[in-house]
Image: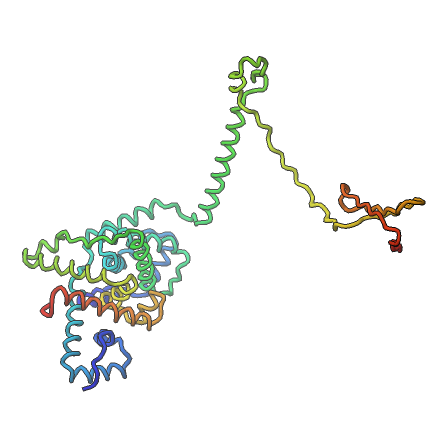
Length: 195
Length: 190
C-alpha cells in the first residue's frame, strides 16, 4: 500500500509541468533541473537501494543516473515519459555496479533514525526481516531481481517491466514466477509457515 | 481432483500475471485444493514480507545525493560534448609529443663540443659521447609499375660446326637464359 501511495505521489505531477521543466533545463536552467531531480530522486534511489542492497553504493548509482540524464538532456524528447527512461538507466547502472563490485556486499543493517523510533524489539525484528529479505533477493539472478523489484516492489505492470528491461513480456513473466518461487522457498526455509 | 497447479503458475496467478482464461482455471482448482491453497498462501506471505521489509530512502540520503549531483552539474563545463573532449585530448597529446621532441633535439650537444675519438687508449671518452642520430627521412615514392615476369627478348646465335644457342633476356636484368639447342631441334621463328 505504501508503495502504491509513493507511486501515486510520483505521478501526481502533471506531465505538462515535467515537459516544461525539461525544456527549461535544456535551455540551461539549473534550478529547473534540480526540480526534476527532486521529483524523481525518491524513485531512483529506492530502486537502486533495492537492487544493490547497499545504501552507499545505491546513492552513488542514483547520482550517476541523474548525471547521465543531465548529459543526455539535449537529446531527450520532452514528449517521452521520463519515469520509464529513468528506471531503465537506474537498472543498467546498478547492473554495471553490481558486476564491478563482486562479491556482493550485505544490506546495511545499521539502525537508521526510523529504527531508533521503534522499540528495541520491533527494531530488531525489522532488521532481521530486512536481512532475510536481502538474503532471499541474493538468491535470484540479476535479471530475476530486476524483474521482481520493478514488478513487486515498484508496482509496474509486466508490460512496463518488459519495456524497461528491453525484454519480452513472456521472458519477464518467467523471471517473475521463478523469482517469486525462489523467495518463497528461501523465506519458508528460514521462517517456516508462521512467517 | 485435478493435478496440482505448478508453483510457478501459482506465483503468476497471485498477482494477476496470468492470462484471464488460465487464471480462471487456477482459481477453480485452488478453491478445491487445500495443498495449492497453502502454497499460494506461502507465496503471498513471502511477497508481503519482501514488500514490508524495505523502507523508503532516508531524507538525508536524498539530500546528500541531490547536492552531490547539483554540485557536479554546476561545475561541469556546458556545451562540451564527447567529441569536443576527444578533439581537445588529441590536440593536447599532439602538443605534448611535439614538445617532447623539441626538448630531445635541444638536448643534443653542438657538433663542436663532441669529443673526437682520438686516442684508442681512452675508450671511456668515446663511450661518453652521446650518439647523434641523423633524423630519418621518409620520401614518398610513386608506386612502381608492375612488370610481368618472363622473357623479354630472344636472340639465336649460330656458328658453323657448333650447336646453336638461344639467348633469352628476361624481365630480371640479372637473369639471362642461354639455351643450347640440339642438332635436330628447331627454333620457331615468327
